[in-house]
Length: 232
Image (cartoon, rainbow, N blue to C red; front, top):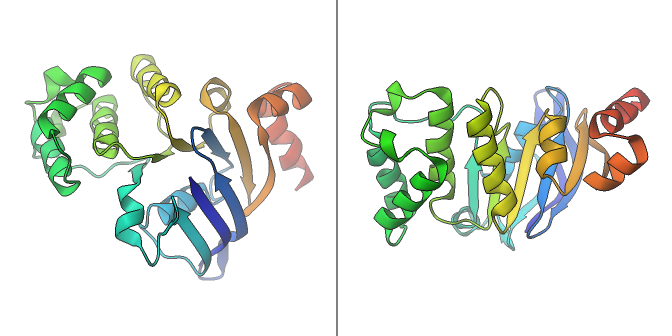
């Protein structure tokens, strides 16, 4: 469970997040939607402990991301839109490195299982620099979940991916237990996998509800999005 209270983040004179509040509950897939610059990626980076914020509080399963950062991060996995990977390492070397940092027990068995699940086992002996974007996304996904975190943050997880890789990641999200937060532009992804959606516009939450309620009320997530955007 992730709780965000009165969170404000500014970049100079620009307010990326303005006193926002969220509660992301266990066993839910939550989508954060908004246009470029709405604050989606900033929100995820703050939750992951990557960037500081100006005001408010973020708790990961009861641990403060500011004052109990190590404990909070143990309960968290983060997949950025553009993952930074050591491309001179093989896929296997990279995953073993991440597993060692995370102190994963039975790392070999865990890596083999996740590699089979994502269909990347045959590529583990090759340098990551030779991977396609989809393969890099898969190896990044494994690195984000190798320690079996309760909470996952995904920033545009299927953007630019081939249909098979996209489906693999969507299937994983739907089957896992725990809290999954997706920052995305894709209304199709939201309708396929999400339980709840927050619409974030100009640093404010302008609406939130279950995906099914939005669809029932507005016809589609896309129509719901433009309905609230037109009111801003």
